[in-house]
Image (cartoon, rainbow, N blue to C red):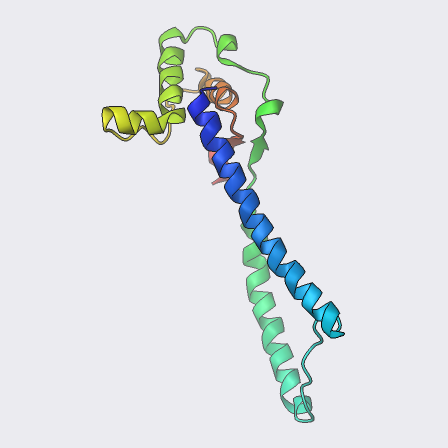
Length: 164
């Protein structure tokens, strides 16, 4: 992997860690303030008053109707895809045979995509944002895509076209 790509990934990782630290610091400050003031750590539900007996059943019915409408949509939106992490993929570019020129082109595209900062500053262009393999069944498109995902160190998302 190129050092520029590794440096960029490390910068992104550190930025995420700083964000997480900031969120945790805010939460810790809130809990510590509640602890020092003698208040319970978790907030209590609000008191609804005596008139809640009249309007609370209506709100409950509206919420139940909303759930009845939303739950079928949420349960039907599950995608039947499979994600393979880079360490789970056992195919590399050296395992792809019979597609010599195509593998070279894919490798070249991968290097440009991974080193997009240099491409942009030195050549003044925008690198490709993805790769589309097309062809008849059984020509090695999925095999090459798995190898590409492993070489790039990114997850491979397998989705069958019939799942759409």
